[in-house]
Length: 236
Image (cartoon, rainbow, N blue to C red):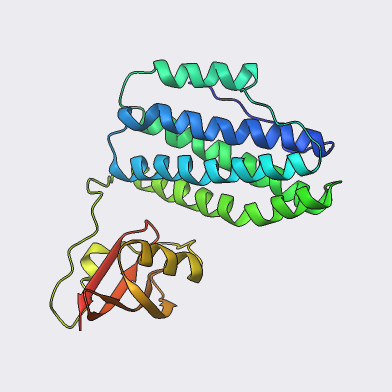
């Protein structure tokens, strides 16, 4: 299955908007199209994250472009549309094809955004590109980690957060060591989104796992977050 490989540099502000908007729309629509055809739970979670994160980035790009009096494409170009149709018509499961597509797409997106952040001709768009690069790199790290696991014959079958236990030692069995691209703020936000409050003392250990303290149900809790976004806690 072949996928579009966009040019990695933008010649102008409008060119950057065109390429970034089409790429972002393709990310959302391609991820939406595979959700029901994925077997691996981690890949499903990644696809949903692409829908959420790129959806937000697309909205931000539209806002910045409107302020700069630039037009935002409302549809995919012919090449991306053809690729999307191939993905939509492929028989399930499509995990490997989707992951490989995401590896290429994010490598290209990082180059496009970094290039414009450094050499772009529009200050507002340069700021947008610079602010978006960390998220794109985080996505890139996630999909590379997924690809490595798939190549090793591993899979993730659970989408649930491991249960909170009542021992004095964190249940590290539910956390997966690996290069963690979450920043401290992102880790704190993800832990809070899982129902914890007063997240503090976050530090990333030598296994790439963020560890800290938090409150849940009125109890102090040791909490850990791995590179996949899994959260494990133990009541103190």
